Image (cartoon, rainbow, N blue to C red; front, top):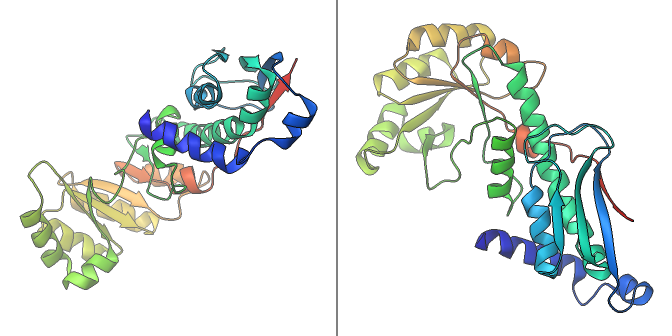
Length: 274
């Protein structure tokens, strides 16, 4: 919550700065007000507690009543929450609260569609580090709300040897060997491969997870057969709602989707004062 409060304070400072001159001019003094947060389209809400936190950072006296929990399904026109408090506090917090709620709900909604698309297969939908700077924790939370799984949070909590690491180390075997000697036994090693020959190298090096990057469906099927359960198999690159089901059908264990966080559309949510 400390990191969330810092994020909210920075966002409020960015928006309010030296003061909300419109509200100061039009709504002077303290006036009680109530407002409704309404879904303008079908969506899966995520970040209701974040929206509440925004208003309560402006005034602890604000009363926020959520009518839907994160991960529920909201229909068009459905009431998400009510907010009661000083009118100025509601008006000053409106944009920041909506920006965050709309963003996170967009990620959760999109993630749920990917999860639905692979239902019935063993494939799990996971996110990537392609997140909005400063919002990673919240965006990865929204992925979980939508039924997805988090990949590593950052560079510090997982080993993922990519093509540039392989080039710098002098090959897959050397890269994996160095990583294995450096990390504790509690961490797994994932390696990115682009060809079936590299898959063979990764297997020989005893990688724990093998990523199939931008491979054809035929090559993915061959790789899954070759790996035969000796490592987890992750598909990555070129994944969309149109292609994800076919990718899942190849037998991969994990499908990483950068679009969950870098291309999710903000959901349409309004705040209406009564």
